[in-house]
Structures are given as C-alpha cells and as structure tokens.
Image 1 (cartoon, helix red, strand yellow):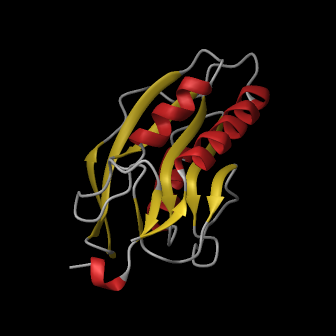
Image 2: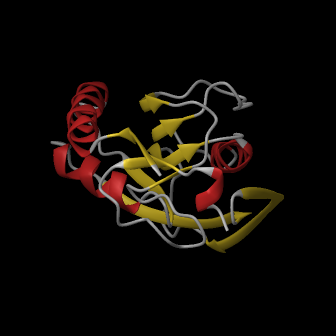
Length: 172
C-alpha cells in the first residue's frame, strides 16, 4: 500500500471543517447522522472539534462487497431521531460513485428536515454522480481504492491512522 493522506494532514483538515460547521450552524442544534461502519473515525474526530450542542444518530447501509459496489442498498440500521424541522448533517467516510449518499440524502429530505448537509472525509469527484453539492469535503481524491481512517477492505485496515491506496496486489 502507498500513503495518500497522512494522519497529520487529516487532523488539520478536520479542524478546518469543524470550524466551518461551527460558523454555519451557530445558534442551532444540528443532528449529525453517521453512515456506519466507515464514518466512525471521521465522525468522532469531527465531533470533538465541534463547539455546538449537537445530537448524534447513525444509519448502517451496505452497498459494497470487497472493492466494488453491489448496486443495491441494504439498510441494516435506520435513524431513531425525529428529523422533522431539524438541521441534519450526514457524515460519510467516502463518496465514491455517489450511489449510497444520493439514496440517503433523498430519503432524509422526504422526512421533512429543515436542512440536509453532507460532510465527507474523502470525495472521488471524478467518478461521483450526485444530485446535490457536497457541503463539507475533507479531501478530493483520485478514483483509487483506499483504506484506513475508518475505510476498509473486507472489514480490514479501518484502524490505520493514514489513508492508504491499495495496490492491485494488496486486493485478494
């Protein structure tokens, strides 16, 4: 594997994103909705830098197996919060094709929130097909398969502190 984004770069960028969210939501109490499993590291780091009162909830959606999308969304866990009239910030580890995040944004918008924003650690802008603009982007990255900082390959490598590109020989 080769290094794409170091732990120190990630920490600096997370602070920048948190400062922008603090500014944009001053006086509000947003609900951060994380997409499990991958978001947990980014979301924890981001929330530790947030200076607002917030609520937290999670969804668990599966659309990948190994290194490729299945093309099907499977809900494993839905939100429990009432989002009607609330400001929502969806937290995602990576936006790749855009399939999962498009589905979730549209689904949540149909539940009557005041606003829906998206924060992602990584964004593959070259390949993502989105129905909306991403509000908070950690890093735009090339369309390579990455692991670390919560991202996995068959549930491995989430624990890595850096974002690493998997080489073809690493994918088994």
